[in-house]
Image (cartoon, rainbow, N blue to C red; front, side):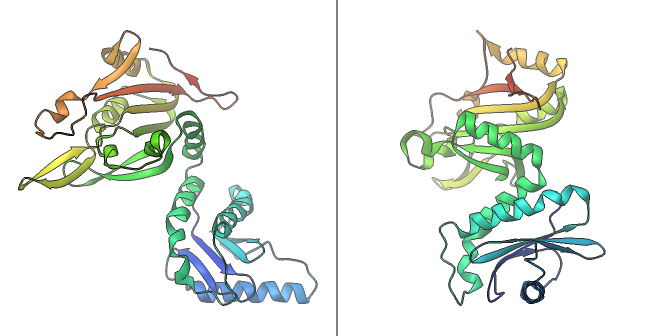
Length: 291
């Protein structure tokens, strides 16, 4: 979904607490305008205002005890679900945050990461469904469209990144730099083809971090412990390609060669990245694809 703006403002004063807008729209003017309309509607005994439209946009309003969350979206039928999404975003904002009588918007800057992750789910509904499934299946912390640095110095995107570092011992430490606690998830809404599969497999050793070690920069890969591929179908060519990585019923990528040139004491001994395939079904739970 293409949400064009989010504004969370204090219900009584209309002061914006959090905003993320496309273009140059002033969140203070916007929230003041919406508050004025809401107060007018109450004075006229028209009831609470839940949404209003312009020629091109729909503004959905989800009032809570202390705040009102507004979503701005193009006027399309698919945005009828936006009210419930706005209400959920407002609930996330109020959880663990005390909304003062005279709030300052910069006091809520910590909401940026939560809002970004939530908007990613709104804009990628299929990926969001898959993220819920893999979280239930593998646990850990989920990041949608995670941006990671690559070996060449650029940036790339992993559809879903799972960090299970807190799952085992309750700590988040540097061990995850080697991917011990990382799971990369590739999501394909249609059929996963051979070329797409090869590109994803190649990317397993492409992401990492550069740091200084003994007067030289070293690249330490985020080589994951597991790669998960979720698709509605898998082309036969893709499955045949994976056969080369399958031994005794287990499919994995051996990453030992990645660390051959790194003379460091904390290099992990087990560098296998196991591969799981799941076929997505709308009318039933996902089914594991056996190699």
